[in-house]
Amino acid sequence: MNILAIVPARGGSKGIPGKNMVDLNGKPLMQYTFDAAKGSRMINKILLSTDDESFAQFGRSQGVDVEMRPEELASDTAPMKDVINYHLDKLEKEGYHPDIFILLQPTSPLRTSEHIDEALGLLTEDETADAIVSVVDIPHQYLPMKIMEKDETGALKFYQEDGEKYTTRQALPHLYARNGAAIYAVYTDIYRKTGSLYGTRCLPYVMQEEESVDIDTRFDLFLADCILKSRDKI
Image (cartoon, rainbow, N blue to C red; front, side, top):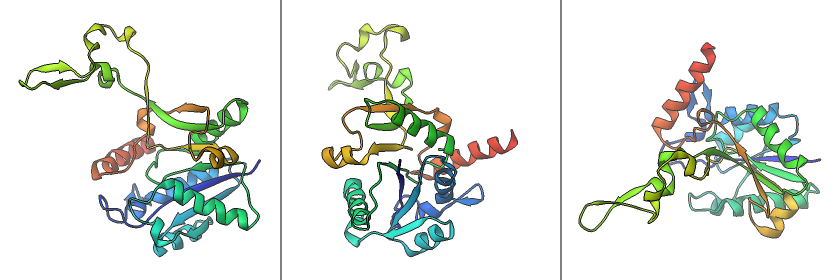
């Protein structure tokens, strides 16, 4: 089975300039994703999609394939689906059609090779599923029925009208949120038909909160650095 890893890394980050190459515990942020993808037993090909030549040079130095994306796909408003379709189209013209592609965003540096292979294993072993996405449990205090807002007088009320009836944790549903997401994987033919990274039946791959930091702010970077340093001490 051919499994393609797409690593999208544009150069125009506003929150943290040059974010995808920012130092994290002694390594460029992007390297964590390259290391995880290269360590996977299931990924056959790794493609860095970028508009930044310095990112491209780093990708080549790491032994991954590099494809420069056109300018219209390099803005912060360019849909990820358009980026994916551009690369899949180009690869198919070159005679390469992956059975599955997995989207690995560089902003999830705590995702490991083991996470990737476990997620892909779950997907390929379930004959009824065609996609998988990584998620984390939502803490009970942040569930919709526990959230409150102020009314027009400034008094608190439940955001969900029946919220008051949920008086025990046992009565609350078990909900999930994407953790970035660190992992999206989908059968290519299904993606082509649906245009969705979630396919028609998407499985959850549950990751722990301490594995799920998504780098968007300096605080996220600080938190990931602390977690990595604590791992080094174990």
